[in-house]
Length: 255
Image 1 (cartoon, one colour):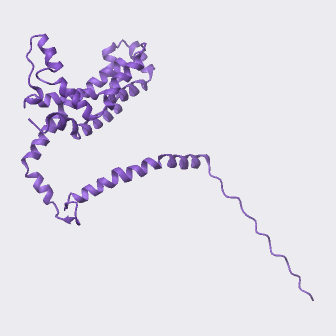
Image 2 (image 1 turned 90 degrees about the vertical axis):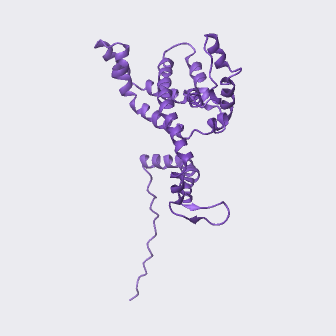
């Protein structure tokens, strides 16, 4: 008998499974945010971890870091200048943050009115928040100048003798707090976005119930705006603790 040789079965390539629309959206989303993630890891998370590690070492930029445990933190806790700086920073935060948030919210409430040129006004209020710290400091140095500054000149018009501001230890901190209100435009824009997202029917229902403008503010606007207020509060506190450039340029560490 002769054996029959059967041909080998042909290999068939199975089609690759296609991604679903949700999977494609997920992949595209990860691709879009990947530059930010990489930048965050390289420029934020990495330096943060390195700074935390170096805080437990003795390193003079030359040679290898030498671990010293909590010695640096103990020296900081015994440093009088550290506690003085912390006290000034806390007082600066306690006054500048609430004043800045209140002023930003008031301006935002005015900037959502359907008036001609309102977008130009928003831009004008926002612009100071994007100006560099050194340029702003030089501008306010002229404003606070006790001899020919515009602030003391305006006070003199109403019969008030202006203080020394940055040259006076009692007025240097209030001057910095006053200057911090210059940059409320950033918080104002965020408040405007939050106010525009509040449903109009809530105001209509409150008005039908007889609520006046003040009651609508406290019963509708503030509760619905609470996430935005919290975000601005956190960012303002962080920003106040990071304040250095303006204070250093204007006071050089004093008086």
